[in-house]
Amino acid sequence: MTKKQVSRVETRMPLTSADIVAERMDGLRQLFPEVFAEGKVDFEKLKLVLGEEIDEGPERYGLTWAGKADAIRAIQVPSVGTLAPVREESVDFDSTENLMIEGDNLEVLKLLQKAYHGRIKMIYIDPPYNTGKEFIYPDNFRDGLKDYLRYSGQVDGEGLKLSSNTETSGRYHSRWLSMMYPRLFLARNLLREDGVIFVSIDDHEVHNLRHLMDEIFGPENFVATIIWKKMDSPSRNEESRPVSSYHDYIVAYCRSAENGRIYRMSKPEILDAYPLRLDDGRLARRRQLRKNGKNARREDRPTLWYPLTAPDGTTVFPVAPEGWEGRWVLSKDTWEEREAAGLTQWIKRDYGWVPYYIEVAPETPEVPWPTLWDDLEQNRQAKAHFNALMAGTGATFENPKPVSLLKRIVKLSMDAGDTCLDFFAGSGTTGEAILRLNAEDGGDRKFILVQLPEPAEVEGYPTIAEITKTRLRAAAEAIKEEQGGKLDLNGSHDIDLGFRTYKLTSSNFKIWNPAADAEEELARQLELYADNLVPGAKPEAVLYELMLKAGIPLTAPVEKLKLGGQEVFSIEGGRLLICLADPITRECIRAMIAKKPQMVICLDHAFRGNDQLLTNTVLEMKSHGVEHFRTV
Image (cartoon, rainbow, N blue to C red; front, side):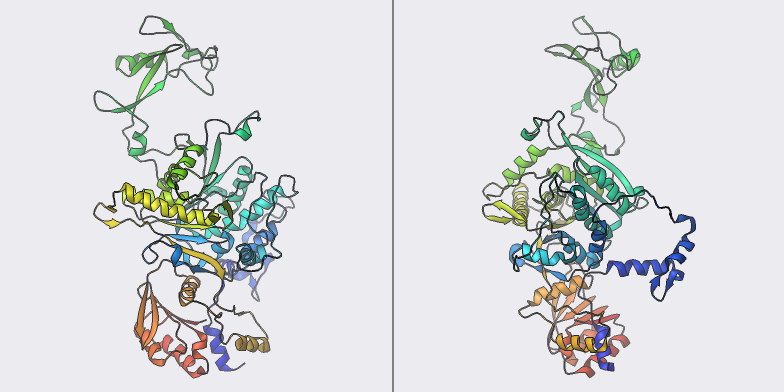
């Protein structure tokens, strides 16, 4: 191998997603350098170093299932795809900081690892519930991009295999767990140290989800299992059941319990639950004196069975409408104290007089959020809102989540400027919730939505991703109308109502294999990839692929410059310079160096036939403090 060839190898930038295994090995090497021998982990030494922390027993507590090893290996296979910008399907592409990404979320999460590692404050997902119906996510973990491309019609569809997860299949739970594990694992990497994740789920997998989250996030980072009341009465397909589930679960975990930041319920939300106003101006609410629910019978608290005198002089006992003897909530002394203070009330119902006590709103500005959310919109209101918002578009969606539900989750976990990720975006409720909250309080929260382009079976909408984008546009227009066209709230800034659309696709480059060991094989690759741009690759798509794989967010500001007579892209105020000129001139190189960037990326083919220029460029970049010079 010649010296010139070596210089090319050393400047090459990897065009795959982050190598998760390599990153974790580096972390292990930093902690325990003594357990490495010839580049490999010596597990006997590791056991010795960890001492009593090692569980060597044949039986141990944990979650396992058929296919878990494949699910773990799916994490380790880097993605060779990219996210291509689609301006015509975006709103305010050049100014918005919101993202709508269309593609298989496993591949997308891999591609986001470099640019968004530790940047996301809150993740909310509403994954496919394991109800015995099919879910559409490809089960060929080793080549998810290939399956995605087949599925989305970008390549030949022969050989496509999708998960068919019926209740009669032998791996009913295993397939769902294998689908979820790598996605949750990759999602955790994207959370900030103070970040929080919320996962909606129903009875079928809530127990397995808890075990899965414990393994990935750690049981010490469990926050709560929230119960959300999704309906008041059973749906038609539940009428034959002896017990009907009126609720779903939302499982919440912190990235780190020590640093996790979760906000309490603020005073406005607390006071919304107190609709009465007393003569002295205090807010209050009416509470029934007779106990309902658990431990509500006389024998449960015999001392709370006593008579009261109604306004017409009749005697009233705590008797349930069904006729059994109950009990009051307050003792007789407490009732009389409240009565003397004017904090009681009698209301005449069809079945007689009912006593109530008046509860005054708390003076403290904040209290913890409850785990029972029965005061929000339910499924039917969510669908009614979706239909009203999308009226005239022809779009339909079976079970959208309520905007009020997502707004509460956002209030619980996000501050101004924070970013939310939803990689099972569905109809786009999360995006609308962010837009509406920003319009209400002038915030600048941002969202990243990811949705597989699975069939929508709706006329005019070939995929669900198209419905997602349509909803985001409709929500933006509705907010503009509600604001009367005035979006400069508080005189501070305009609200970001746009989104940039990106689609998962194949790389714009013929993928270079840096692991080639043999000198002959390396030489062959150098010859094969001398011009490694895919024919027809668009400059803007190439630009954003290089940004993403260099670890730069997709919404980073981009400026076009003329340096040395050639076009150069300046990203993040000049921190990164990208030149796609071919060939590149010495004047352009020196003009880029003069800008003092941290990183410069050029096409390797731009130096073809001028190896001396490449060698001199490497030396000049180093001597002038440019930390990273890479070619692709």
